[in-house]
Image (cartoon, rainbow, N blue to C red; front, side, top):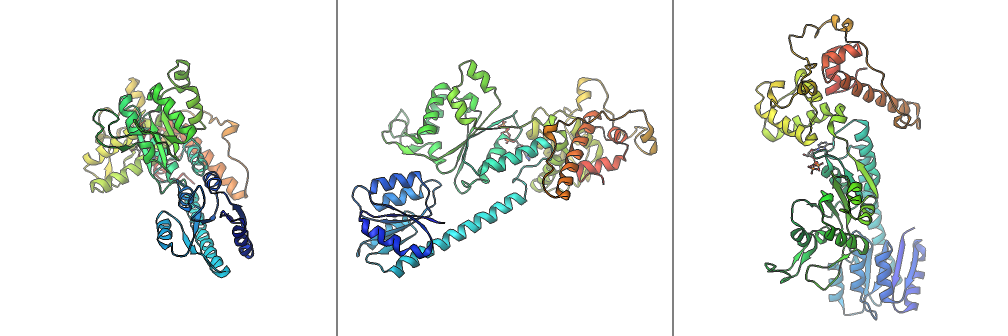
Length: 489
Ligand SMILES: Nc1ncnc2c1ncn2[C@@H]1O[C@H](COP(=O)(O)OP(=O)(O)OP(=O)(O)O)[C@@H](O)[C@H]1O
């Protein structure tokens, strides 16, 4: 049932409006004290607010601002006295939905509220459609099929709908910023800014003025008043990258903003309301930093409401072929090239290299290879010489994918002496649920089996496709297809 707040300092007038709206089946609440109403509007959510413009202690304009600040979306109908159209127009410009001029008839009131109800219905339908689309398609720009990355996608979908703080942990290049952006774009804050700031990029005093803004004359060189990044993120998301690098002084100031939801410019007197969601990322061990008194425990608990741990690429090698293909497609578009695929030898190399720079390094390596590629497929030779398979890098020489490999082709592979695949271990917690229809449950179990089997296969064969084929007792081309497309039937 839509929730309506009627604000009028004349109780009788408010009650009459509530009575007139009864046939529309709304939950009508009444406030007769302007300042109380303003505070209530800031705290609570309403679908429609019908407010008088002139009230003692608080104008209707203040109600309009409170009702439309940040992510609040109440539709406000202002009620004005005869001859104050200018003020009504001003209210519309400030975000009010419509206005009624006193005296108004029961019919005029109902028509106006029904119009607002239609608008709410349309907005809700739009949101529902967007939610269906989000559920149907993978998270924008994020690629990965490994169970750990699929679990991360599922977590994003859950937290995106809320306003909770998220702490993203992971090595450099694992996608922390991309995941943070994804949480933002899948949240109701999508139309408001996503503001990233690298806490390691500036000395503490500069970072403070960047974050909090300053008044003209606050310090030497402050020639004009400037808003800070926290203020710019109002209604949206602030992404604090390299959070572990934030100094203790700024940590307490940030904590204050998160607790009080207000801030003051450097050198300023006025407190400004801010409505932000914070997502933070770090590569440091914050618990250790707390023990060493370098990081505030209270700030840590505020930001670590939901924790998202992104695994390094070397621990989810089954994602490499898919990511590589995606980056190849993007590089083709960016560079105007038409490289059709990745040769088996090159794919083996990519799967077996440990990628210390994670996805960022893989993306750059593919881009470089596309630039150098002179054939229709990326070859191992198109990659920089430092991209070496794991074991070759350690000097064991196990890696072997050369065309001269005598065991590469034919049925001989199936009987060669590479032994059997080690048992695939699955902990009970990793097993998919048995809920839903037979078909759905079967598909979940099959996907789980395929991903785990492929991971084990690639790890044991160190990315050597011929060797993987022998261990799995299937054709080499089938493995190649599996890596670049779908699993074998
Ligand atoms: N799952 C993914 N799918 C596709 N591209 C990805 C994925 N994860 C990361 N990337 C790409 O990898 C690169 C690095 O990602 P990002 O900047 O988000 O990493 P990061 O962990 O924030 O790095 P740093 O800690 O160095 O700031 C970006 O170009 C990003 O687009």
